[in-house]
Amino acid sequence: MLRISSGKRYAQAAFELALEKNEMETWQEDLRGIADLTDDEELMAFLQSPRLPFASKRSVLQKGLGETSPLAFNLALLLASKRRLKLAREISQQYDELLNFHRGIEHAEVIAAMPLIDEDQEAISRRLEEIVEHKVVIDVQVDPSIIGGFIARIGDTLIDGSIRQRLEALKKSLLEAGR
Image (cartoon, rainbow, N blue to C red; front, side, top):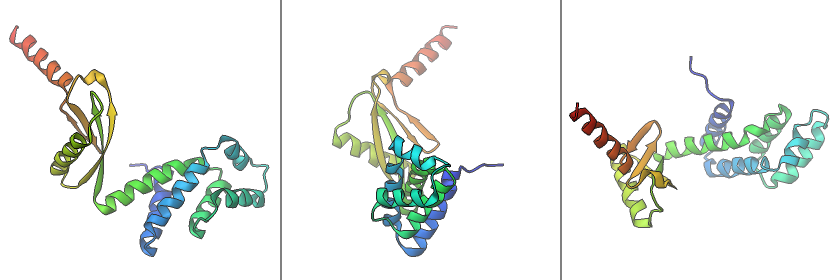
């Protein structure tokens, strides 16, 4: 049986509420705000403490989050009361993925041998869009060990156009031919 993470369930619920009320960007900002709040380790230790009264947690969250929609604030309170506030980053990321999927946008992780100029990034993005038939936003990382070319990962799809992979394939074919 497929198990879905708690963060994904919370994100799905938030997304459905946001879609129903047409507040998708507001929810995205609010969830990022909650996630950013969890980066403060001292604050997290304070909020996760079972000894701290709920009213104090509420006050601290209210001050830390500032202008947040009431439903997003209630989500933060719920997470704090269940000592699951550490899921906020995952919830925010999962929500972003749901929103991008709703908008028809795919994210691709691209690994290149050296930093790519804007024109190269746009060309790779256009080529990947042709392959997946969706708009593609790329996140470029540099890894000199691939020698040249690039490796792209979109969801479960891996496209390896690296020189390293081509050299490995050539080496394998030469070894097989020599037998």
